[in-house]
Image 1: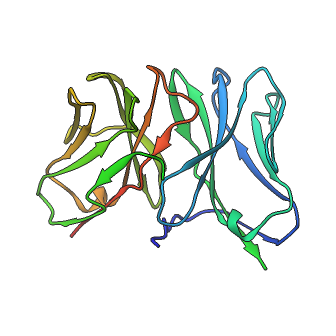
Image 2: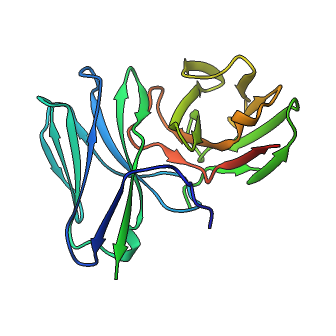
Length: 110
Length: 114
């Protein structure tokens, strides 16, 4: 498939380990923060979101943490699998629009 | 499959030309969004339509325009193309007026300007 080919930070983890992907956001007024996953040759796909009045939300194998004090968002993936290899984008919803960060490329080593 | 269809998947054209990218949203979705993804800029929001009307504008150049038709499909028109317009163009759709956190993205159109 096609590679997005972005010049991105890369995180390389061993299969089975936990992954932590970090993101800094800019707008204190954003009401939602969202993580998207983009596999090669595909469009971004929603993973999980968190409302701005929360600091933690868990999904299936994923946890999002929000630290509003330092405007930091993280995505934790438990027991990372080869299928998790992708580019991960954080996004903030501000004035109704989704503003995306630049993304982190996650590579999972077998 | 997200349910959002974009055509064409690939487009190669020369500088100065005009192209039209097409997007069919998921069945029932009234909002359509266009994003540009380039090597150094990540995903940039261009424009949003809701039920045929423009709702929000992002970093969209004056050479670019879009519209949403009564059947809710949308077209993004890019004119006077420049080399720097080469990018992936994504369409996304969601149900409500404002951007849902869960927007559904198409597979994109890769535009190459030569």
